[in-house]
Image (cartoon, rainbow, N blue to C red):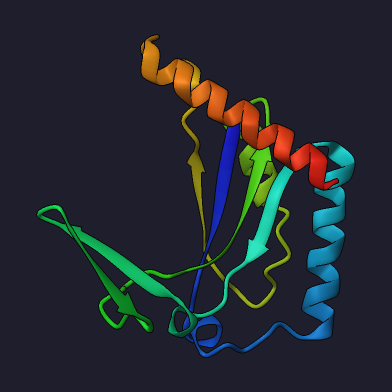
Length: 140
């Protein structure tokens, strides 16, 4: 099962405060452990919302709003996507995250195509997913 570990932002991450050397080193070590275990699929930190935009879809129209998003109560500051055998394994990895200064991580399983009823749309998604994987392989 694929699981997204969503790092919740805080006032420091929204202000663009970067982690110090000690925190970066601990995170690099943690990420290396995920890689050695063969479970890491993706991981990134996100810039503050002031550097982004929000697309709001209403009534068939799209409104683009430049950041920061003052109405956002919970901001995502980063994420990992891991492939694990169970929820328990995902939680075990989360418990090892080196957040010595505090923080919050939301744990969310991702939908798999096998979760949906078979049909043309699922087949189309499978072809698109294959194409994405081929593109990623070419970039390596």
